[in-house]
Image (cartoon, rainbow, N blue to C red):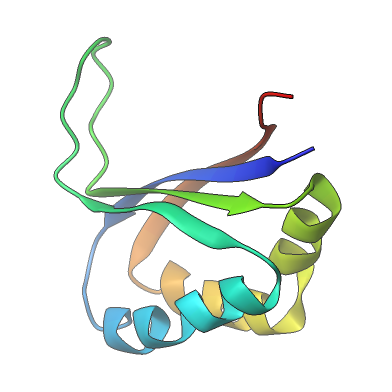
Length: 97
């Protein structure tokens, strides 16, 4: 069953972004994933929580591949870089069968 990683990101500085975003698409693809949403300018439709600066949805063939991507040494190294200038909330969910 298809699985998705859904994220909401608050950006505090931009120093890390060039390196991170130049490397992350290829890494996602090598793990069988594809960005379905990647960008900024979120608009609130309901709720009163703070809007993120950017949001993303990455599709994977299944949960195992999504979890392997997230746990990979290469992604975790990029996550350390990302954390130097942002805060991320991310969840893993199943697609519709």
